[in-house]
Image 1 (tube, rainbow, N blue to C red):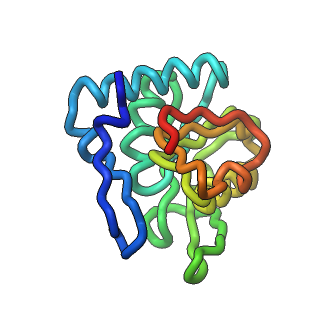
Image 2: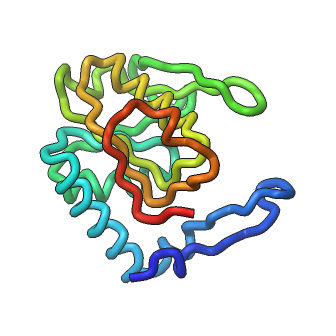
Image 3: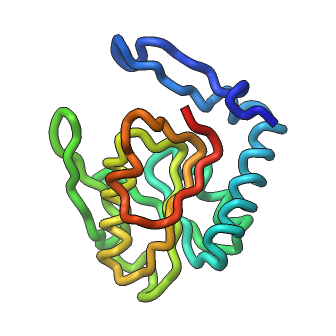
Length: 172
């Protein structure tokens, strides 16, 4: 299936000069969504083996991470923006083009030595995924790799990540 044909390009969003890759058109297509999750699942099984937890970043990482975790027989752990989680959290701050942001995860979310896969819809500059990797590594868990639906190759996001296997379904 040609997944690229199910992704809508929106020029000049969220600001002039940006070409936004809109996944809502993929999500609304039952066959495309099923194919995406099934293909991602198989590639993750082949690449990473047994996974204990899938970690997804707010908010589109939740969309793909939860069904992937289900298919892999793993738990799902959300990584959220500040103030969204009710229990004690660990956090990491990271640089943005226009300032600093922070991500949080429950302190008790991952077990020591757990095999963890980080999932998001897209990797662009890599800042959010790299910060999430730092969060996972703070817990003493084993980060085994990353999975993304889309990679924007020209932005160099992979170079910011730890040298681990990465699964991507679509490249632009």
